[in-house]
Amino acid sequence: MPQTIYLDANATNHVLPEAIEAATRAMSIQYGNPSSTHTEGIVAKTILEQSRRTAAEVIGAGEGNVIFTSGATESIQSAVLSALCAIRQRQDAGKSTGKILVYGATEHKAVPQALAHWNHILDLRLELRPLPVGRNGQHDLQTLAEWLSDTALLCIMAANNETGVVSDLSGIDRVLDAAPRRPLWLVDCVQALGKMELDLQRLRIDYAAFSGHKLYAPKGIGMLYVRKGSPFTPLMAGGGQEDGLRSGTENMPGIAALGAVLKALQEGKTFNSDRKMRGFRDQLEKALRIAFPSVEFNAPLSLTLPTTLNFSIPGMSRKAILNVFDAAGLRVSTGSACSAASSTPSHVLRSMGLPERQSEASIRLSFGPLSSAELIHAASLAIERCGKALTPTEDAAVDFTPAIPVTETTYAADPSTFTIQWNELDAYLQQHPTARLVDLREQAEHRASGGIHYGAWTELNAPMSELRTETPAWVVSDKTPVVLVCRSGYRSLKVAQWLHGKGYTEVRHLGGGLAMRPQGL
Ligand code: PLP
Image (cartoon, rainbow, N blue to C red; front, side):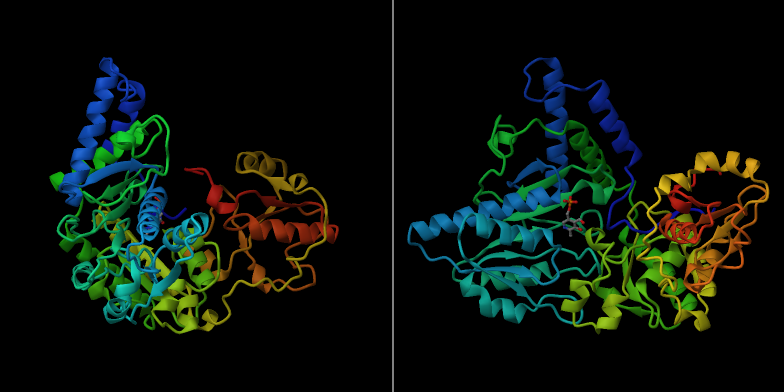
């Protein structure tokens, strides 16, 4: 089985060993509730405040507040609620306030959705207006300046999750400074932490959202920075934790883990330098250019985070590339993790004015500040393998659309009667020594993976897209045992259903596909 080469760090990542240790301690030995007044409580409170201090230093919070939350989505809700409540108070007091909520056209959907939600809940009837970006992904500051006098709240991310394009925060700050009434400003810093310098107090940012799991802390922990004096309305009321700003018993394992990550970031020994990360990106860029000479990079690399590459390969569908990359062990994505399963073109690339065919076929490759030289080398070799597997003659055809009527199969038998699991496979093959293992993946996927190699069984590669309505030759009779395999178990299930419908009851499908193959098998 090819080595797993995880290049989807913008979606999430594994947890730093020191962070796992800190979380484990917080769950086993230092398990106190920071609100308790006894010794265990004092220990927990010390960890909590130490994590907060480190966080404040790392992000340049100055006199501002750092509040621990469940993640960036909650931090964004909290900031938006606070800003909208302040706008409402100004309105109620008859003071001037803008009527537009401006957000960058390429924001993560947590931002426009939160704006729409709270605008509706609070019945403010403010206008939501996306700020356009140019072909390079950066915001149109001229337009921002024109809208400024009517802007009540501005939401602009520090770096984009799909393209890695870094926003010109200093430029935006200057534009805001020129306003007679400076609007409130929320910055989504999720993708920036650990990958670029942050000094929030220097820029007059009111709110900044962070997420632990994007930087080697666990999922379910995040932070909200609130500038000193900026309005705040708690999203969660209750026991008064976090000085009453965010009630609910603190997620101490998460906070301790995030604290350990931030400490490592501050000490500067654990994570790669900017220079090293840029070197890694150059290596990957070169590998892509060699493997796919027509590759198009969708954002200027001079403006992006050093860890993100967004590209398209003309003539190849996203699905084809993803499947072949996955077969070679390369875990990349189509854009934001939330929309990874959808085939709709990225709103980010669309906003940048990319042609539809290019945004429809975009792939995001992202590594993290912990990625090693070995990983990048292995990735470059795997990319080369994919380039060879996806030969130009096949490229046009590889969209993996089944040519057989399996998508609307009407066969109603319970799939559990013909599904076998990995832990049952050995026993099945021993009982059925003549069984054939049939890999339904496309040729390019099969080639990029180097084949399945399961014990003494060599599989036959029979791409699903090449199946026709007649029974395939590899199903010799209704008595011949056949085990169908694919990447996730989806294609094998569909083909098994179709063949059972034709009366071939000895056909089996391997549940979970190659994705669920146990380690070492
Ligand atoms: N903002 C950006 C830019 C992101 O990439 C993400 C996660 O994908 C979020 C917000 C949401 O973060 P969380 O998962 O912590 O809620």
